[in-house]
Image (cartoon, rainbow, N blue to C red; front, side, top):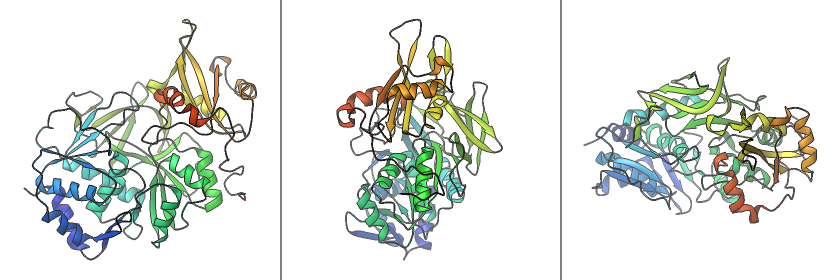
Length: 443
């Protein structure tokens, strides 16, 4: 049974038959669209109802195509990720995503073919993805972000894909150098590493950052040194793309994440959280349904404001810190702390207080540009915020700890800091992104 997704792929393969489609640099091999179609059609059809695609090579793409050809459900997995212990999705489903578990336990989300296709059909015109700017695939193909920005643009829109084999700075630089122009989607941790290594390719025509909040100082520093605007992209596994910053210069407001992706409707619910509606919203959680994802609407846990078309994120409902009955969003404190010239990056989170009547203590984790005492930063914050919002606990590290998806989720920061503490060190300043602002001369 030829599915809608496979039919669309066949049309792309016919239209671009002789055009290079996938460059697997680690394997030293490239496929045209026609060759990719022939390899996918020649292989035996999978017998399973759910097909698990793994890896960061061309075999991942071929596995997806074989599953589409067989009418099977695709479930992308990281190389070491175990298949979900859930029953087969109901009839009519084409895709199964696993959430990243940064806001709670990992859950499965099911999508129809139309919902999966709607996301890429929204993203391509919103971002301006182009066949002559092939995607450089340094992010995971299995992650929702990678699948929507790398895999479906290739298979449903004919956007070629370069697989460098590694996200290390030199590997990315060498891979990009083989092509006239590239699109480079990444996460903030990768942009930071590439910037510090001086490895951001000069032929990047479109730079995208998602998966975590893009620090404004990093965005400004890259723009100042390279003249390259990194476009902030905000999305979720449950609904695909939500908002995109298409502006040509760095944002003025670090809370702003862009305007709604084409085809996406946004509103703020009574609890202050953003709601997303549109054709790309998943069919629901599986096997346990939830009112947060139903009937084409995803009720996020992100506190937000909508003003003049811009989406401003104010924090997560679950991250709000309770200090003796008074509540504050960590972002409120981070935005003040980040304005200190000695602070390169920071993250604020809560830990249970030793004083029961306080509820929680506020913890500040700081990545410093230069050596600075916690007392100085404490006084700086105290001069700008109420005393009860000043962090009680201060920690320093050369960089924010990240999980295996390159994120620094607040709910895991305490654990990650303890786990990676030996590697992170105890307060040594690390190289700054830049001491200059956008438009100034970078050193």
